[in-house]
Amino acid sequence: MLDTKIFGEELQRLGFSFYSGVPCSFLKSLINYAINHCQYVGAANEGDAVAIASGARLTGKKSVVLMQNSGLTNAVSPLVSLNHPFQIPVLGFVSLRGEPGLRDEPQHELMGRITTDMLDLMQVKWQVLQTDLQKAKNQLAEADQWIAQNHSFFFVVKKGTFSEEPLQRQTASRPFPAKPIKPPASTDQKPSRVEALHVVHSWKQKQTLLIATTGKTGRELYEIEDAPNHLYMVGSMGCAGSLGLGLALNRQDLETVVIDGDGALLLRMGSLATNGYYNPSNMLHLLLDNHAHDSTGGQSTVSPRVDFVEIAASCGYSRSLYIDSLQKLSSALNEWRQRRGLTFLYMKISKGSRKQLGRPQVKPHEVKERLQKWLKDLSLDQWRDNRCGGSSETSC
Image 1 (cartoon, helix red, strand yellow):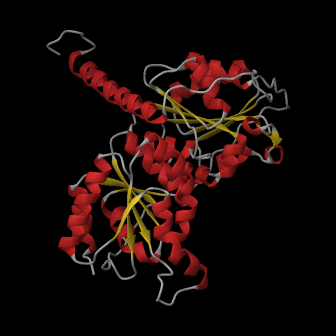
Image 2 (cartoon, one colour):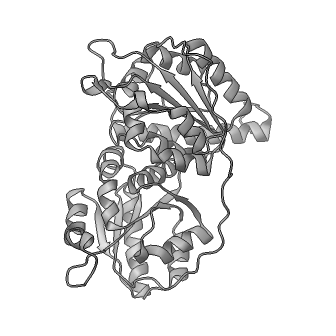
Image 3 (cartoon, helix red, strand yellow):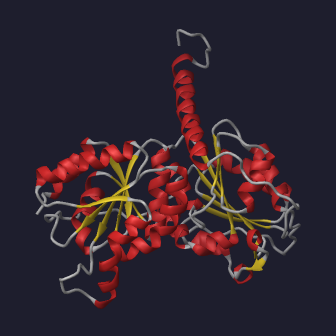
């Protein structure tokens, strides 16, 4: 059995200080250690955890994800369509419930047989975590080398691997939800998506990061301008808000703006609760709702029956507003810049886009690399401003 405290300290020594995950009894002691001694974000599901950890990784944090092997199936989408194409490495710990030859609950039987096969199919490096401390440290060193080469690495954890780590007392988040703000009557202009994106783009400043959800949102933003502070989600549908959360929590100097779609948000709506609980004041969440899966032929979503503004407010967003015109969108953006606070803006838009809409020509890993450079340069500029009062002299 591994001494959880010593093992956790070794992870910290290697720089792994950010964790996100969903609990499993096999991993409870490592999860408790992360909550007690590190930065831990409890996710609504395993796919969100991967996206949150990936957002933190983009800021330079070496990130860890924790999950039961049944939840590995939920994490497949971001692992293969976010982490792989963008080359965002995370360190994972996945339990081996249903291990062949050991008695377990029937729902774990099949997953126990295919866990490592799934990791192989996703081209994720993995090893079974050893219970000998020195061997485990050697495994961590090897995993760290793979991480440095932009490869995700997972440890498969068997029952009884970790020693007991008691959970220290946790403090709850803000208990009272905000009151949603809605117009007295429906006066929606329903502009096009690209018109709304033009408003957001013209409003952004030096410290603004725009994260565009997968599909035509990213494609249209790319056509407006391709910039280092743009991130186009080309896969991992529904993960834009979770990626934004990981970024916002670890770079408080950013204006992190997530531009979402109704189909994407419906797919992982539990992320609203996670965002509301951790409540980063520098994150703005804009939902452009056209009641359709526009990128796949315009099939209807169920969003006409969903009150997103009410849901975001009840999930803990500091402000939740209904926007019914481009002018009000511009005003809401300016107001948020002044007052901050985790904010949800909901706007109905029209269906469709221009014919022959292009696609980003820059590769996902190139988007990641230039974004990381932009983040680094932004930090350097802020350091210079703080030290030299904005002076451009080389001595500063």
